[in-house]
Structures are given as C-alpha cells and as structure tokens.
Length: 422
Image (tube, rainbow, N blue to C red):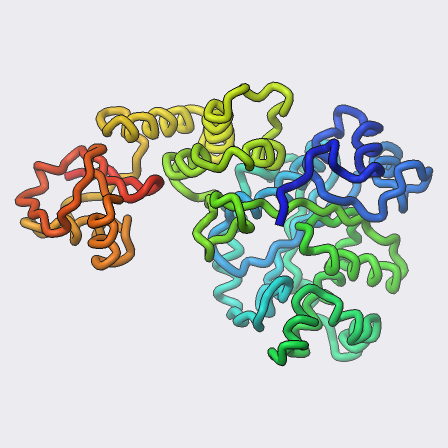
C-alpha cells in the first residue's frame, strides 16, 4: 500500500482538474486519489465534477457513509470526514449516513473471513460515540450544511420484492470481482449470501439520499460504483465517486488500524496524540500534512524534525485546541528531559487505588500502561519503563508508600505516560 501520490505524480486528468479549480474550491481536490467519472474537458455536469461544482444552481449532496462497527475513530477514518467538511465550507450539503443497518452485516471489503454480526444495541452505542468524535471536524451548526441519516430508515422497510429487485441488478460474477470475495471463494473459505447484500445496500443508500458525490477510501470503489448503477436503475443521475487514500499507520508500512496498534485515535489524550505524531517516520510527514491539515506544503520547515513537531502541534490542536496542544508539546519535551512541572498535560493515575507497600511491576500494570503484570515485568526487564526519565529495571522493587511517587511521571515505551497523583 502506498501513501497518497504527490500532485505531480497524479493522473494527468486529475492534475488538470486541480489547475482549473478556483482557489476557493482547492481544498476539495487536495490529497484525493481519484474522481470517477473524470473528463475534465467535458462541458457536462455528469462527467466533469469541476464543471458541476462551478455551474450547479443548487448545493450538491455529498454522501459519506460510516458503519459504527467499533467505538473509536482514528486519523485514517478522519480523512473522508475532512473532505466532507471541505464540501461544507464550499457551500454544499454533507449527508452523513450512519450505517446502523449495514453495520449489523459489516463491510466484507478486504476481509479474509466473514465478520461478526453486531446487535442493534451495540451499533446504536457505537454511533453516538462516532458523532461525538466527529464534532471537531464537521460543521454541525450551520443550517442546511449537514444531514445525519440512519440507513435503517429505508433499508429496514425493504420488502422481499424490493430486495429481489436489488439482487437482480448484479450477477454472481460481478460480486466475485469484489476485493476479497474471489480470494475467499478460491481458497474454499465461506462467502455467505448476506455478504452479497452489503454493496447493494450501501449503493441503495445513494438512491435514498439522492447523492451527487460519494466519498470513500480507495477500497470503496466497488461499492461506490454499485451506487452509480443503482441510481441509473432507479432513474436518478449517477453520483460521482471521490476516492481518498488509506492512511499508513505510525509504523510507516501498513494501513492505520487499531488491531495493528499503529493508529492514532481521535479521542486520545493530547500528550499521547502529540507524542505519536511527533514520531511518525520522515517518509510520511508530507503525506500526513496533505491529508490531515490545510498547511501549505510549500512552506514546511526545512528540517524533518521541525516538520514532525509542527505536524504534531497542528493535528493535536484540531481536536484539543491550540492552548492544550502547546501544553502537550511542552509536556512531551519535559518527559524527554525527565518530568517536572511541564508534565502537566500527562493523564493522571490516582495512587489511592494502590495498597502499599507495592512492587513496581504491580504498580505499572495497575496504571493500565501495561495490560498484565507479566507484560509489566517484561517491559521493565527490557528497559522500557521509566520514572521521571530514569529506567526502572527491577520489577520487584518495593515502593513503601505513595508519597515517594506523588507528582512523578511513569512512562512505558515511547508513547505511554501517566502522572502519579495522591
């Protein structure tokens, strides 16, 4: 998987669209991988998105669907949401579809096995956390700029006749062309019929909300194209697809994913978010700036280390505010130098929950910096645990009382910190 290409490396048609777009609309095309259909010379609002944007006599309806299959959103998920905000700022209507119905099936894209089906209660709880996390990005307040729709509104009302009509728009061969299906089928892994319904239901969302443009990652092209086909089937003008890159994680190699541990969550505390961003590989810096900020790429600092600091400060400020981001930056610097007053932005852990005297490995595990006591022992023996910047190598070191630890910063690895308080 590759990061999003530099503008100079993108297809000629896309580069031409970027050059012809008015500056006020430039953010819409920043960092995108593909628009389809894409005929930048056409004077046709169904083939040329730039022409449509400039000449439409009404706000376009920009669709983004999210399935609340978990509780935490990371920076990779934020990329299409930021693009949705760009359309809002250009005067168009963001249509955010909460896939409360489709989440109960799960998008099979890129999956090597069938996904666990969620309960309605799980989906509803996840949906609320999603909306809370998206508030720093989207405009929730300007009238007419945001519609929040739940696809159970129309999908739960489909009768068998309508479902058969949807199934009749695609062949098994077309479905098996979808990423993951053919591979699973050839390996003898089960592909269940209800999974075939997922791209059809996502496509029907576009019909239900009369989408003009659908946003998605590069792995969503198949599903977005199905939406175009279904809109034609139901007599609507087909939507444009706008594809965004999949963000590489903090390891610099694989797609950002919570399961891989290379993610930065939108709800992470300011210091953790800042510290992770400050350490991303040099090869990803410009990619992160392009996809996660509005910073002019031509005016970045010359030195990669200074670029990392600016990136960390800019992105942390988006979710926690400029003042808190500055505090996180100072706390990160202080932690490198060994704690102290500057560590005020570190999350706190109350020593009142510990029965003293206590061994250090137990204390480290109790803070949550390590998942188990065994992991705490391994981290300490490997030199990965510090107190006020000093390594603690003996897991069985006995701490007699809380007073000796109060106010100090405990660190595990490069990115996990807590300040111990009474």
